[in-house]
Length: 359
Image 1 (cartoon, rainbow, N blue to C red):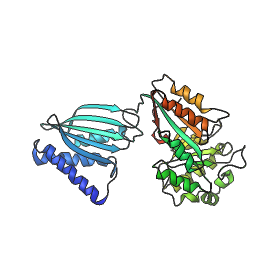
Image 2: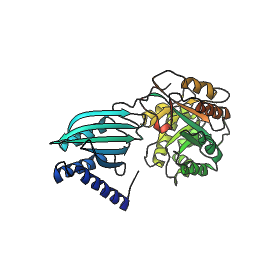
Image 3: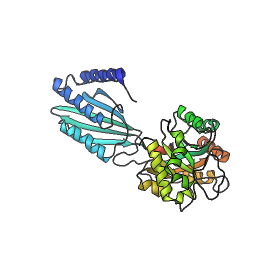
Image 4: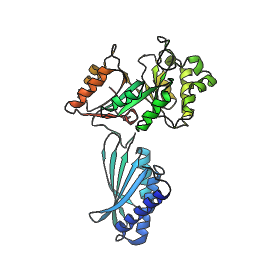
């Protein structure tokens, strides 16, 4: 949750009132000031507007509860503890409970004669210290080749997190992207790239030669100039293009610039084993995943996903890429969701744990 202007001032005043009440009997103004200053520095580890804090009493001792959006990796934990130490809070005990993208950390500290608890809630995390274990299985459904708003509505009726790859280069691409954003979903682009087997595609194929020509590539991506940004991309077709590293590097660099250097996640949906999409993305420091691509004729969704759901592994992850028009995949998911719940958590692609073994 982000606050600006007067709302931020009001929130800060409310926090100060809670602190005053919770700390009033534990050492006077100097102790209260130390806690407030510590909280300010702890919140700054995640940036403006990413944290909310409240102070109450727990078993007669102050409990500082901080909720932040973002990761809590080894480096951030070190800075968190360093902040406590610099303000003379001595660590007595640390405990934590983790879920795939959420964590709760409890720190029991001592400040002079006062016991103070710091409880940290972390949400929407990509990394959690010490690791981000998933109890059970984690799955992301990537619906690509979205051709209409009706596709979005239909797949959303499943009631699980779904990531939509909107086909790039159609006359209604902008309209569909706006519809995805209006639902609060992440904006992903499924880009048709030059393929040895396809001459005419749904959308506008980007040829290798145009990707290597800065002017032509800029024209192809012009639709993104007035956009608020996007979360990720995948290749809709790719066999020839995805073997050409210079073309991929040119495309990835241009997309990074169009997105104003905001994070872009790459999802390799090219089934060709010779594809360089994944490796090129990793070398260029993108967060990159591979998907298992299903198709009604070559690799049906249901047998592959059902086998994954029935794995007995303690933890495993899979991203399934499926065509928006694959009715058999849609019905299979409906059936799975109606059955007794397996140890399976559905997430969006951006929320996949980096520590999970992919199966």
